[in-house]
Length: 152
Image 1: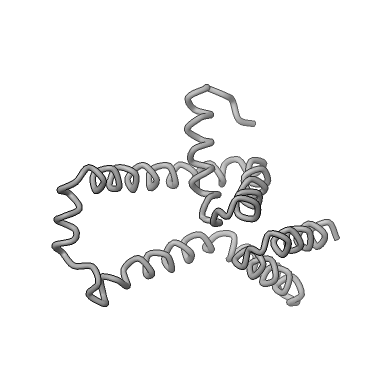
Image 2 (image 1 turned 45 degrees about the vertical axis):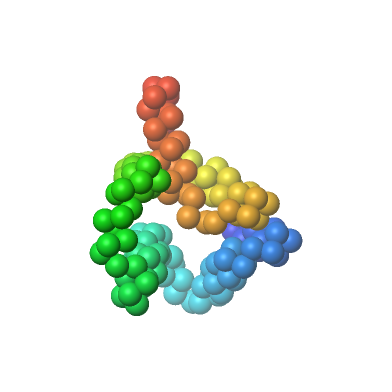
């Protein structure tokens, strides 16, 4: 019962914040809870969902290349400006933090709730997007390592 109330609460917050992605996500999860064998579906989503999401994002990023809107010369030209180099460095940093974040989420499930709440606050009240939990967990991992905080 608690999970239903929690999800409905997230749905209401998403409605109030007019965040379509979170509205859809909460409806889908609530709907999945109604399916008799959701206990088989949720572990699969929990394990593979991030990979599927990253794949969809990657496909979206590659579409401009496929349509010819971005060509090889655009890539070459991006290395001719400081903005391009900063973008490459940030891409590398985010990918490394995300890698650490996925491991951190797996090793420290108690942190997941706090990260999810932070993501919901960012998405609903600050017009962020829900790509944050993995990156946030990577940043949290980095800070925890720098501060040498012991995790249970």
